[in-house]
Length: 103
Image 1 (tube, rainbow, N blue to C red):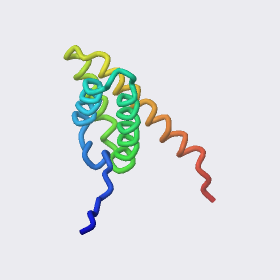
Image 2 (cartoon, rainbow, N blue to C red):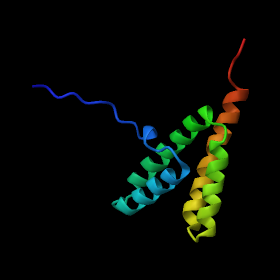
Image 3 (tube, helix red, strand yellow):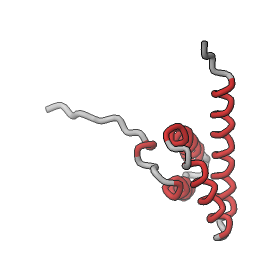
């Protein structure tokens, strides 16, 4: 009997800004020390932010609120990372809007 696998995409499971911050935090804990898991987590979060911003215009504001909450609660580094990822996603979205050819 052959096994069938379905494609796993982390974007399907990271639905809220809290999920994003918990995913980053969990990957920091489980990283073996070489930083590879952290890089993969940040890439996954960046792709998730880009995808969610295209479908939900309020998602960027929700990420800002989550980052401010993290910073207020003393998790400054995690809040800073989340804001940096949001900034990169917004920069990508703006550049894509201006430099996409539309006849």
